[in-house]
Image (tube, rainbow, N blue to C red; front, side, top):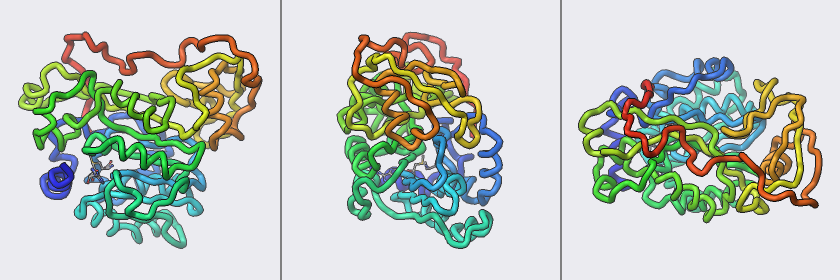
Length: 351
Ligand SMILES: C[S@@+](CC[C@H](N)C(=O)[O-])C[C@H]1O[C@@H](n2cnc3c(N)ncnc32)[C@H](O)[C@@H]1O
């Protein structure tokens, strides 16, 4: 699988124009400060972008970030601006052609961002084997990844390695493709379906269980969209499987509970995170308004208190008295389209 994927991203695809589906495209509206950061990215780097979501968590100043499957480096160069000169971004990818482009523009971007020295580095390697790159335990604040983990033949190792190198309280914030049912083995063998980030996709419930097994005890869905498969051949092959692009955030917090439990706690957002003056969106179910008491379960409390977000919240309560299960933290079926729907007219523009 590794060789087929290298061939696909190194030789078959030359730019996002060559994609056959919109799986590896991003359609989300970008806020102005991100548009500004994007405008500084060299066109050759941007033209080989194959991501499926926006991997821009809040509060990045000074952070050490690792990008799994960085490709030609578009996300890394945007993040390089958001972490500032004191932060650091490392991209890992296995495909020479992608890394050649990423590396070719380090000096260009250092100058464009007005930095004295680069705050970015790219390494060639496999995301299943970060130990071979000497990446140490507890060494990154945040890990991002954009449309890559579905391509890995060993997703469990990827998640376990991510957990190992994340600092406690850090998070894996990543966009990827998921399916609403398990993809049959014969489709996984199809090099185009696999290369286009479809047939390697995990069924969402298998993903959530795998994430928990690897230590990420309460996966939080940030956003999702159904993929529009507009290629007739691809559509015929995949039949009634529905695919989604989704962004999850997985916190490395050992004390999270298996379910959201109610301890009568609440938080108040101070509105102090740059570019997020009115709301802090933890995930799809938590838009926390500035200055307003917001009831939270014990897990959400920990995600805010034991992470880089702590200083931006006031915390009320503790975990001494239990009031039962917390209502409404998430839903069993995470994605927006009903899995029993026959409607194939899902949206999704391209790139
Ligand atoms: C769909 S592209 C996404 C690239 C990049 N994240 C972006 O948004 O443009 C997938 C990338 O992941 C890399 N990749 C896939 N599997 C990998 C693995 N097991 N180890 C390292 N890189 C991998 C490929 O070489 C390719 O560059």
